[in-house]
Image (cartoon, rainbow, N blue to C red):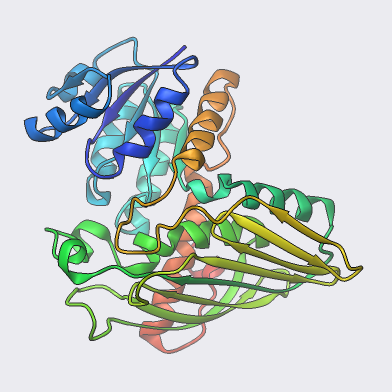
Length: 343
């Protein structure tokens, strides 16, 4: 049994807690920490895990193997450094931190202490995404010519962006790219490989009163010569499932939410997964916890085998650098090469 401590009992905790219940034959939750009694009480009413308001009880428990850090991004570096110092492996909610410099420092802190760091970018664990990865590994699509991502979500001002700290650089580190689209962009990069150049526009629309960007449009050229686009926004009412399209010499793959449809040039068609997850609308938690469960199981597998999870800290830095390149291109009004500028 792997023994887990949870730090942070806010909105992000529910799919993790549900997954930990599903994995109760493999993991045991020893502590669930929040500073506020209200959150501890609300969590305890839903889940049968012991709660605490004492962070040292979590970090100082020699029986705890790993800690799930589910707090706001601007708290990640300090908390993960303390976990690493205590010798605890870490599963960290996205994004890694509010900027890439702090994210690199966090990843290096875990590397220095020899603890495993996994990042919660669960879209890689959707059934359709797993099947698409398998097809690409088999060469079933052939050489890619086009790879594009569309994240056309809706987040209302009232009830979402009006929450304290939401839509600010200080707490979130940015807008639609790092807070919402990061999942799809990470999945895209895991399928295509590194990005060579981007040319982007980004802005804050008149539909939201926030500091950060809520609309981004970009052209992308990948290291393998593939060209595509990124279209990301949180102003598209009522919110639609995100979509990745890959066009290869043998067919076209369209991943809509968790559902994959592949149209092969020889006339075959393939369908994998379903479209049931819908977190593109006003409720950011309106999705099943299956993907979290697979990600956590993968993290536990890595701990048991002394290996690496599918989404490592170092791997997750790539999407942070991609986001930096998109925003820098928009600010500087020129083409940016992330692999050379944001190493």
